Image (cartoon, rainbow, N blue to C red):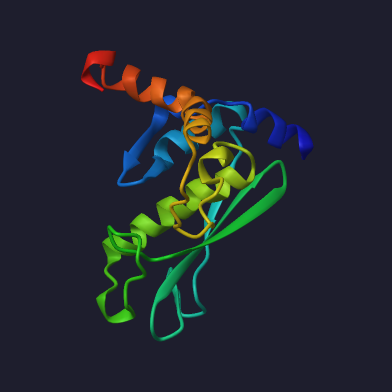
Length: 163
């Protein structure tokens, strides 16, 4: 199982990501394709309630449960059904489109648990706090994100004068 993680974690998916608001997203289709190139027998399971409903609820909000199995190891992800602001949707406002989006996002996250693009999710569970940075800290942060910035420049065919 370490070999699966090692292989998938080594794949750079930066050129397959999109920026939505402040968050970086990897499309489920790209993620699935990249994994299946290496492990074509990969499977996904969308868990359902005893009544056959493909999401779960506590009566207030809802979430999906998706498992991805690679080489007989299943990783399961739970993801809230969210709106475009990444806020939980109240159960009375959940639509089939919202459920489908959550299933696809959860699939991508379950694939990340196997290693593919896991770095995209680093820090996502941290509070949204904007620390004050010194000039040196700011420069270090910029350098750390250089690869992502270069990918965006390449993706949109920008030059430095457009930044």
